[in-house]
Image (tube, rainbow, N blue to C red; front, side, top):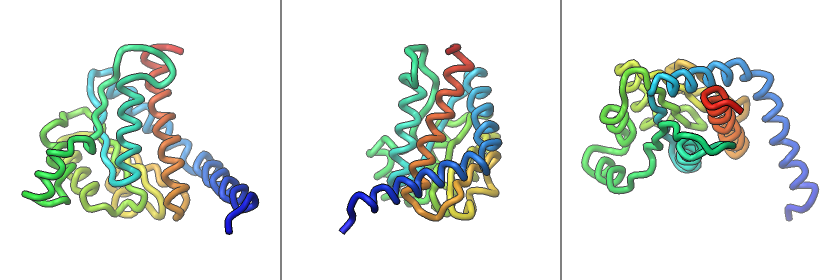
Length: 192
């Protein structure tokens, strides 16, 4: 039965993944932060997509950008492509689940926007399809993934590959990276 030592071990493992991510991915996180900030400064928007826990992360990051991260300020344009249940179910039913995000990228995206594609494995077919459409539309792609980056890593303009194969740890780092992207943009656009 899990006890206090199990909890301490779990938090210790999470700490190690955070530390290793800072060491290996810091430059890519900075590059992604600049990409997001420059897009928003130009009046572009951030599109986000993911499945399951990554869908929740997409919504969380979009909310922080649109509402606020640390300060009350004007909204930043961010849309989670995971939130319209009528669209998602119609698309999945009528045209297939692999295109639930790519179709939205095609309809909502514009040249110069940024797509933040979140997939812990980097292999989610609907995420890969969204990335392919984004690339055709000259929309920059930030890939948040783990494991070896899967197909998402090489397709991304900026790939942030969390150095872990433990899905909960990858997801924990992804949301921390999302917070960094939001706070970076908020600070540079509105001041501290």
